[in-house]
Amino acid sequence: MPNGALASLRSLGGHMTPALRKIARYVQDNPEKLLYQTVVEVADGSGSSEASVIRFCRDLGFSGFQEFKLALASDLAASPVGLGPQDNPQTPEEALEYVSHHCKQALEDTYRLLDLKQVNKAVYLILQAQRIDIYGVGASGVTAQDFAYKFMRLGYATQAQPDAHMAAMAAATLDKKALAIGVTRSGTTIDTVKAMEIAKHSGAPTIAITQRTKSPVARFADVVLVTSVAESPLTGGSVTAKMGQLLVLDLLYTLVAIRRKQAADFIARTAAAVADRNY
Image (cartoon, rainbow, N blue to C red; front, side, top):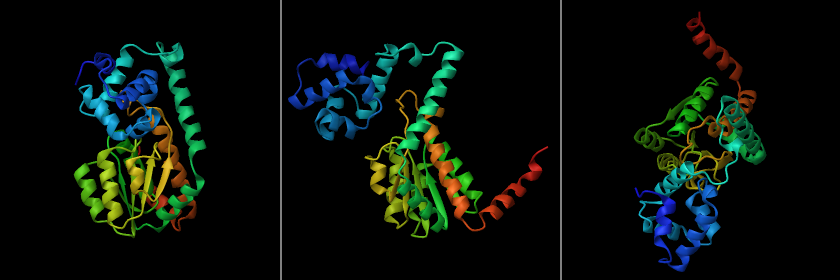
């Protein structure tokens, strides 16, 4: 990987086509904003095409857009642009205030962004399902496991699939009586998108939980539930990033528990099954 995104950009100077110059200007004017964007959003913001954005990154010596963003994030971490003291905590008190603020912000933003019609559609699909497969990798894989745990307590045959090969194979065995849920903050995680694509082609209804409505995973989703969090390549997996996902999880769980027959019985039975595991 080249030494730095901004240094590589400066090294090109004026040796760029007009299309690439537009992207370069956009990067220079919006370095922090770009960290949280997809290649589609950068293309829209710079008035160029996705192919031009990819070519721009490769002309700078990067393998692609994600590697360029990682280098840019490292540049900004080494020399923060426009960060006030509240965004660069130094003491435990400042760190607590910083984390608490962003957790609250993620919950409030997700609350505002959630489309309750889409939530109702998701609940309907869950109620109809005989089997639920949940896909997610990395930090979203942890959330996927939490989803599986919660819905198992409601009596569903549920499993989280953090392994890419297992996810793809499991998705291939689904049918219209099953349900596939993909959890990916960016909406661009290849393994999760691929599993959702296979599940969709297998005939299963699909739900995507993501920050991006215009993203690859959304193309294979019957229902898209939007969460909100600002996360850069260097801050992935933070608690803040999960807050929106967990809000959606608890919302779906609560609504399904209210509407599913025998839900209370399943909750009692699963609780009793592990009651003797406590002192």
